[in-house]
Length: 526
Image 1: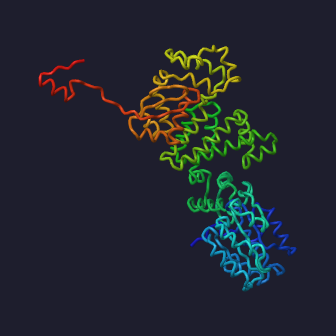
Image 2 (image 1 turned 90 degrees about the vertical axis):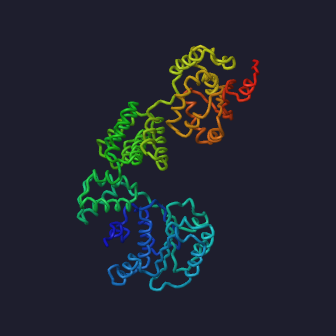
């Protein structure tokens, strides 16, 4: 069976560990001076070298004082690297979470090492231990025998009790920079006879998000599927990603506020085999880079925010950042991030992506400029000449007096009086279509209701039966209806639903009692 590249090329010395010099230098100095601690905590994201560094440290402390080229030192190093050393015990806390597993460790630490100088316990994903297991480990972790070293590794230190953290020397492993991942991948390609261009390696490094193991695994997969020749197109096809031109087209569409340009770019990318979720991730990454470049004015900071990009790409990013406001960027990042979450449960992943783009392009009607809001107010007032007496006081102010109103009165108070029954009744079908675009079940429920009244900013609905009455009270459905109502009519409104079954109109000719009376010679009096 062929050995995976990330296992075959796992670092065997601290000098081979990539991107963690701040950790490896300290550990080497501790071994050289003999100031070895009894408990260590390695913290970092996946694939950054925590477990590898723990194994190397276990080897170094056990061959300290020996000639590295001696048979004894080589034998110890090989046994630890291959997992055959009895005194280096690796435990997966994700599958050994109970207190009994820790009690077994506690009972065995007192025994002397069988063949090495130190007995080293490497507990991976230690944050998965239960509270009782942590409590059982505390005393042993604080005062272990002199021949025992604990190395705890975790990706989530927030879940580790403070009592455990205070007993360990903590080392924070960083995400590996893109340039160092590319350099390491280039070394592996040369050693394995893999042909790969720099653009392909950079795409792999960006997708790995700081995890060298993920990058090497993806390189291994691509080399197997493309006959040891890897191109940028191969990487995009394997990831379901689109090319940079599609992302640029989407961002240009955001700048121009052109819905059609973005929809065409999305459809074209999906037709070519791109994955909608991967497109959303690329958009978030691109917009985040623009946001960083806009905030960081120093050229050095801008270069770091656009890590792994050419000078021409940095210039293009800077030009895009100048054309987008910070409000637009933050809104777009939130929209596409929410789209990624929605795609997990959506039957059609394309719809959340298109809705996120549309949300960024279409200016929200709830926040227009004062000069633009006046014509809409006048138009709504003209469309509802039969407004009831109650909302009338909010309508008389002229446009001249309306413009300073936001500085003296709360924004919700003014729009609440503008919505009338006649106006909402005239746009009821359009309102249902708008709700259907964001929440199809809520729109179906509205079709089973009648508009009854609009009073005091509250829209009263009559449900025909129990189902819409109950379902429209659910937070998700109610929030969709209210949000659409507020967006369409530029205000802050609420809905109330009550049960009012439809009654059939009375037809004297069909009433069975009256029919029988007529047959007996009777007459009907009005």
